[in-house]
Image (cartoon, rainbow over all chains, first blue to last red):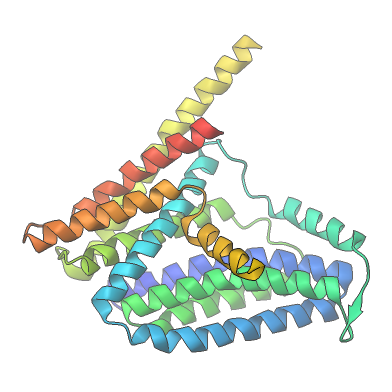
Length: 253
Length: 66
């Protein structure tokens, strides 16, 4: 596998993994509180909708000229990646609370337990819609990532393989422990995904805009190194600033 | 109509997220790259340099509004 393809597989794997961890939390909360029948029915229905979206959009994307596709997809990934990085940097520097999968699970579970029982088509409606919406929303992000990464790099199947590997891993661990995957270093994963989305976004949108990269695909590693270094410098600067702010507030109190 | 507005809101939140200025600055940076490339000037360096700059501006805005 060349640099671009290795990077494509890893990016799809990590980005999808983060989304699957979040979807698993919701499916578990729905299953444990409202019964597995409604939760799994919601999961199945959302999977079918996602499959239809992939089947409809996948071939359509491959018909677009590669440079135009890279310009648009690269721009979208760059915006998307910078938003992920921004949140990850704010969390790592202490300006934003860390994502707590245990707390989210407890909240979802309490809400689901308190909801009224309405049965439609033989399933508990609340459990079904909770699982359906959760899987659909998280799954749409996976679809977006797989289709954009895959089409711009010219290999949707490889991106899909990365996402499938993440699904097998998260679902396997989820079934084994039957609890939200709270030990997954989610912010670190989101940081990594933000770095990869931003790197791909920079690389493809520049190519789509007509720029030539020195070293061709190997330039991806240089871009990744530069984006990672800049992000870590920003984390350090903001962490120091945050500590000074907290110390000043303590002294005043 | 309500469904359409929800659909639009979902995609806005999904792609643009918390800070619309990031999207605007990215479009400006890509446009500048295209202009340089069209003038046969090396343009690959512009977008990597835009990344820390855009992040810094957006992070300062987030911290100010927190």
